[in-house]
Image 1 (cartoon, rainbow, N blue to C red):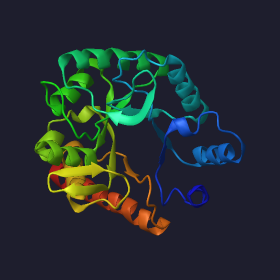
Image 2: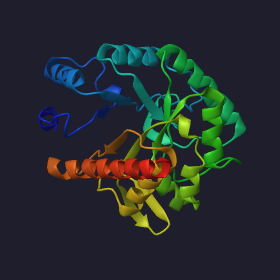
Image 3: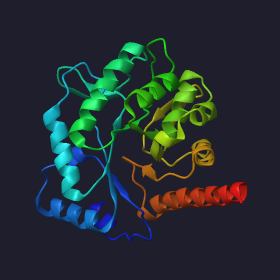
Length: 264
């Protein structure tokens, strides 16, 4: 899709998000195309392998490579998953961290290490999960880490919806209970309906109406934030993707107008 992406204009797309692991050290034609895009558009980086919740030693060399990449392309936003993906080697999957006070302390220490190296806030995403461990709920665990580290949050609205079904909680309460000042930006994506009580975060289908509704509510509660449409496979024609990004813009405009009415 790189050729099609290169033909888009700032009137169509506000910014792009990439996984730095796919681009660090990449030269040649792909490196040149990336450079041409980062010169024309704002970019955010969303990592896949930091493994912030792992018991393995933090890979400081990798974090330094990420910092160099961010500096090279003038990118300030670096987000990662509030999960872990390594155990004496990478597992290439995002595993749920036990929701315990001990884990809060452990993860918070690692977040501070990362922020010291990056010289930027680390932005952590709430992840979709299919099992739950520990004596805290997800909301308490997440807000405790935000409070302990003063890091920022990437609010994945689809993951909130998926987890609300999988673990039986109110997604509107979850979103309304988050600290507004911590929310840096937002993700929205499609998911798969495995069963009435099991949803799977796939990024491989259009966004469902329940998730659009939850996005509108997030804007209403916390204000409009930059929002990424995630799509990882089953790519439709570009026009269909732009229809979804335009839907995001429409909801943002409606939220902005509602805010003017409230505060007018």
